[in-house]
Length: 116
Image 1 (cartoon, rainbow, N blue to C red):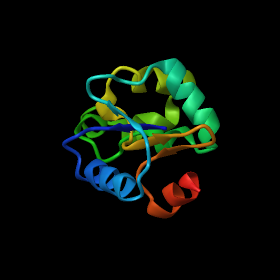
Image 2 (image 1 turned 90 degrees about the horizontal axis):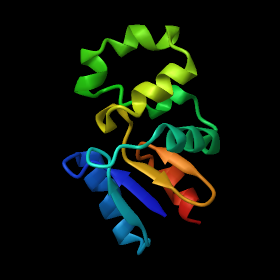
Image 3 (image 1 turned 30 degrees about the vertical axis):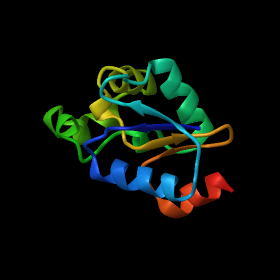
């Protein structure tokens, strides 16, 4: 299992404590130091079954600075993947990647189902 996070993010810290409390075995990847590639993002998006917009950190400074709220609807998926791959801080976090699912953002009920 892969846990992709930004160590300074309080939601990521909460998610990590949650995983540790359940004795989950996982690898940690710092999203700022090791940004997801376009290929990874494509695979994770497909596996998640979620809209691509869910992979954007809509509350992040970069998202707001780039005016993505207004720009995203007009962008193609190709453009969105390319943009996400440029900066880990644009990507929603944490991301839990298992053999079965990919979950962007920490929703305890969803993560609990993923660990079953």
